[in-house]
Image (cartoon, rainbow, N blue to C red; front, side):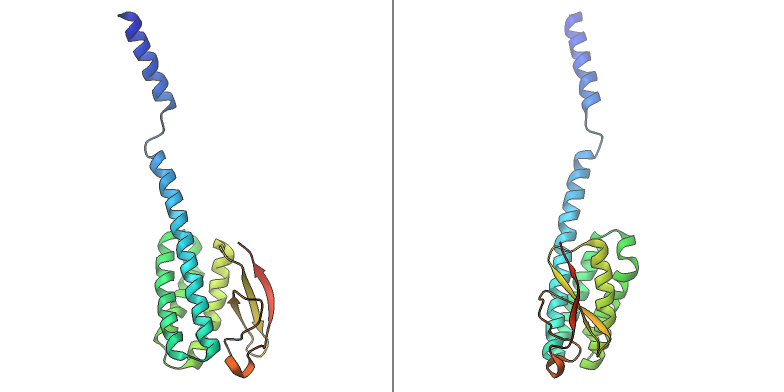
Length: 174
């Protein structure tokens, strides 16, 4: 009987020593799940941004407004997944500009907000990372940058008037 109790005690102590701390298994899952959600939300943000950029290139203010609203929704979702410090300044400013674009009825106002939106989203993606290759383009006439998923320049600030005005200034890699 003593041997059984000693064996049981040894097994219990060994099990406790090797036991996973409370919540550790859930901690891994939560961290992994949050990372996955943040990645999916980042992809949604980039997709909505590129849709907005394409609408501005085409001079389609109603599509730009809709894309601005989708971008605002995606940014709001992404904000919940990112560290508050990461999203703090640039994320909030990008969100404000996306909302402004969604509410604007004038393409000139949309393009003006797009300048600041692009700068803040670029800074946010530089901090948080991207899962797709993006190009940081610059138009000297507009004195403004934008993100693109293509190396070929398609200027959202002047649309078809000056479609190819600009150059790639940086490549953001995943």
